[in-house]
Image 1: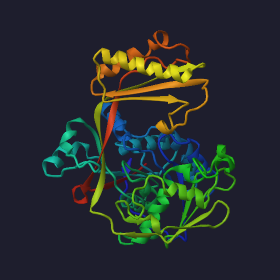
Image 2: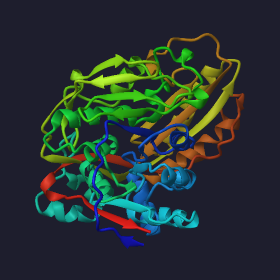
Image 3: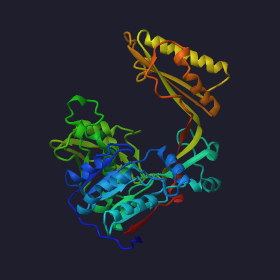
Amino acid sequence: MKTAKTSRSRSEKESIRIASGQGYWGDLPQAPYWQVSKGPIDYLVMDYLAEVTMSILQKQKSRDPKLGYAKDLLPVMEQILPFVVERDIKVITNGGGVNPQACRDAIFEIARNAGVKGLRIGVVLGDDIYGRVDNLFESGVELKNMDTGESLSKVKDHLQSANVYFGAFPIAEALNEGAQIVLTGRATDTGLTLAPMIYEFGWGENDYDKLAAGIVAGHILECGGQSSGGNYMKDWKNVPDLANIGFPIAEAHPNGTVYITKHKGTGGLVSVDTIKEQLLYEIGNPAEYITPEVIADFTSIRLEQAGADRVKVFDVKGRAPTEFFKVSMAYAEGYYAIGTLTYGWPEALEKAQAADRIIRQRLESLGYRYDEFHTEFLGYNSCHGPLSPMPRELNEVVLRVAVRSKDREAVDAFGRQLVPLVLTGPPTVTGFGGGRPKPQDVVAYWPSLIPKSHVKPFVEVSEI
């Protein structure tokens, strides 16, 4: 493996096709293969990371320095690499987790085994500040909780991960240096899609409307099939062939106009309504969608149906970004356990409610206390809680109980008290196959902001 020093010039294209391949770690594993094999695309973008994921990957890396990335990415790359090489498709993913370099090396090994030569992989580094938190804190960077305003000192000693959300420009830099595959850590979901537009069309840091258009396209693509008919509320029964759903593709143009579509012959649906549902997903103030590159105004977005499974997205407005990056931190916050018991007819709900009272009474009499003790009656109130209407006689009800505490022994005691309800509580427990619930670590989320001046991304591009 050698480090690539030369850069490759952009080719001026009238449009590029950016395909969504994964919306989250655990998404449909066939999707990347379908995207590279069923029609023309220029880029494949895959999102693997969530906030809590980073702490899990950090633990894996601490046990083995060769781990810390999304291992599900490897079988995907093994499957799609022949198409990527043959069709000159560029792949961008945040599956590098907290160890993009190890992920790169693993993909290089796949390439060697496949006889691929000349493959360039770029990694974006610098987002992982876990080892710098103490120094930053001591230098006056407070990293307060964005939601509560609390000082990091409250949880600093229990931190498990700390990662800065970088945006699209470092990815574009890796593309400019000739990378065919770009691996990042905690990049923004939208940045994965915006980066190819910056690279291909030469958009600059002050092209706010164009950057905002790319951010909107990234938001539409970031959840995979959710914008092409999956999880569709309005008319889900009439979405065709969900078994073979086509993930969305953004056909981007230099002026910022984007058409959302999918491969011909695939299932699913791309319509103004499916796009609107996705646009409303996980946003706060729609006039201020804040990213590292730009603040996008989602109230300015215009949508038009431009043909079958083709939606035009245009007239997006943006303005200058803030002086901060977002930081995603995770910390240990005690333990939890979840257990279930299924009660059968007759009087299934009454039995489950009685069992809930009994286990609470037994644990209280033993002196155990919990930060949270939450009960659901699946089939009755698990979706709508106290708003659930009183149903007719239920054939069965699943009692689901969850507890949380900083006292591991209290959580373990809950498991020891749940199972005996089978023969020491109300009758007709059935389908009990989960065993005794064990204490699991609670990983809590600490969102914060850091001045951009305190952290810088950097890029490495290597070649075999």
